[in-house]
Structure formats: C-alpha cells, structure tokens
Length: 511
Image (tube, rainbow, N blue to C red; front, side, top):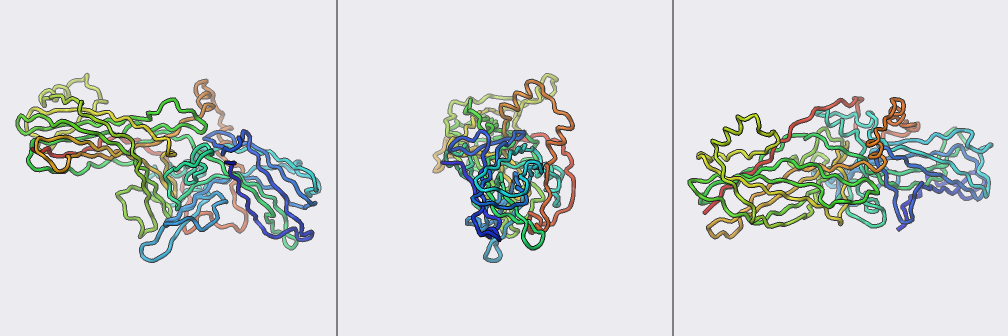
C-alpha cells in the first residue's frame, strides 16, 4: 500500500490571467520506503525535499512548508464531517439533551520551514518545464508551547501532561509501519494526526491578500518518547463481595505494575513479555479452616479513550461517567490477554505475632508488599500466596503510549479475575476481581540510546533552538484553532511524585 498523501486546494480558482493548470507539488521524505508511512519519535529529524513543477509559467509569492499536528475531537457516533487533511486534533460528542453533535478542533503544533529569498527564482515565476527543489528539516519536539494549553486546570500536573507531544491516533494506516491496517482502539470521533504540508502562495490581483493556489500534504506517524509518570491519584479499594456460609475471607491486593515499554518507531521486538502484575492473596480463616484451592487467573487489557468538545480541567476517569450531558465521552475496548491455571499456587501459613517482629526489625525491606487483614480477622493465624501474571501484548492490535491532552486522553488498565473452589457445590464459581491501572511508555530509538550511552551533551543554545518552533504565529484573519474554548495564558509548573498504593479487594469464602 503506498504511503498516504493528501492533496488539497487552498483556492479552486486558476491563474486569473492565464486560466491554465496549477503547479504540481511532490513531497519526498528522506528514507521513504515503498509502501511505508514514515515514523518518527522525539528528537528525530523529518527531512526531505519539496519539488515544484509547472506546465505553464506561473507567478507566485512564496512556498510555504509546514509541519503540523492537530486534534480532531468529535463526540458522536459517526465519522467526522470536517476535512481531516489539515492534520488537526478534532473531537465530536453526541449531545444527550437534544439531537446532534458538538465538537472541537485544535492545531497544537505548527512549525514553519524558513526559505531564504536567495533560494527563490528571480523574478518569482515558476517557468514551464523546470523543476524547483526546496529542502526542509523539522525536529520532532517533546513538548508543546505553553500557549497551547492555557485553559483552567485543577492541578499543576494536568498542564505538565497537556503540553507533552501526543502520539498519532485513530488512523489505521498509521497504526504501525504503514504496510498493514491495525486497530489502535480509538473511536472514529477522536483522532490525532501529523502532516508535512507544502503550498504555493500567490498574491491576489486586487488587494494584498495571499492565497494558496495549490497544496499537497503527506501524513507521518509520530510516537514520542514517553517516560513513566507518578500516579495521578490514589487507587480506591474495590468493594468486597459477601458469600453465604463463611469459612473465612480472602483478600486480594496488587500494586500498579511497571510500565509497558512500547518499542520506538521502526524498532525490533526482542521480548514478548512487556511487564508482569503480581496479585498478593491473604486468607483469614474462621477457626482452623484451610484456605480454598485456587482455580484460574484471567487477565484482560482495557484501553480507554476519553474525548471532549472542550478542554479537560482534570485527568479523566471512567468513574466520572456519564459525560454526554457535558459534551464528553468515553470509548473502551477490552483485549483478552491470557487464562492460566493457578491451582499449583502454594498457600503459606503466617502468624500475626511474627508480623510484629518483622515490622519492628530494621532488616525489613520497604519493597515487600503485605496484604492488610480483613475486617473479620480476629485470630493469630492466616495464609498468604502470590501469583505472578505475565502481560503479553497481542500483535493484532496497535498500542500508543499513555497520554493526556487538552481534548483527548488514552489510559490502560488490567482486569484480573481469580477463581477459587469451596467445599459446597456452587452454581457459580466464586471469583475475586481487581482492576489495576498500568502505564504505557515509549522507548528511545537507537540514536537516542546511543547518545545516552556515550554521554553526549547538548548546549543550552541547542536546547533553546530545539524547543522553540521557527514560526508558530497564525496568519492574519485565521481564528484560534481551538473552537468554543476560552484560553488564558498560564505557564506549566512542576509536580511532585506520589507513592504507589495497592488496590485491594476482599471476599468471603463459603462452605
């Protein structure tokens, strides 16, 4: 499948004097492979050449070459009605109070390639039969300008996250290497896209307005480097379930696992296990009962895409549903990962008196995770067990790093369900379930890893040039790229890290 290009016309009129055909523009990306869409990550250079030809002599004012990133956010149930070729962020939300949809579009990134006057022909005329070539280079930044996110926010961490570069999302052809269609589990109502666009601009005959007489854009895939972030909020305990005929009570607890490290663009997989989740169990008996035998552990991954017609002032959560009445929505997709038998897991007998000795010892490790006793525990003896659950991502899906932006967010969680057996005959197998958040990060590419291993440093002047776009101003007369939103200028402050807190669920075991 060929690399995707988008052809759009900024003005449908032909040359006012000659009424002849418009110039032709080609975008050639360095390293472009047939049938592939180029992928880039943080700090990499998007290099290439713009080639312009004309069948007839055509006067022009300048050539505009830009790298754009945009959100389309539509809260609704169907495809976007607006043109997606401009590479902006858009969302659409189905209104609950009355029929219809509401949506927003935001251009969060626009870098312009400067072209020296000496590179243009003199006079500014594209001669028939000649090729005009203009090189360009854009560096993928890791952070957006503060002016992109100036809406009201409830905490400093929100602004820190909203100004990070979001990944490409919602376009199946850009979900992987561009050779096959993959589902990145995003709804049609929310997309994030990046393009390199070239336009031939011409001054109108009457007045000084400059219009585009032809334009071409090529999609590129951006997967930024994303590092592990601290937990945004303390996970709440899951409500406990009660079963009749008590033998005791089982408590399950799990910490948020280490992040799933996604490969950088064009990376080669060396290992299929991305992370592991550990479920710690505790059985508090009533009397001298033995712990129940364990059955099967199932694990599924839930990808949650939050999108809104107005900027989020806090990190979204599924518990905040419903969103529809305020122009917000949530799309979730569950991906089964594994089912494994854990009947061989061994229970270990423990004593609360030994716990007191261990807690008083200076040799205890702060990394040890203990399960708190249930409310019904009143004795001295209990049992513990641990189950390690490997998390392996299927190759049939495409995954992007966890991110939070003004209009969209993507989060992940693991659903862990454990069955166990009781002496009584049950119509339904007893089950205890946990839902544990997990972050998805993105690794650095080979070039960045080599620089880090060699200790390559960057000067302050290079940093300033890297983070400052060459041209981010909007042309005169162009409205604010985020519709239906009022922004105020606030610079992003820093945030502090919070400790991890286990997620716990308690159920009673029955006869």
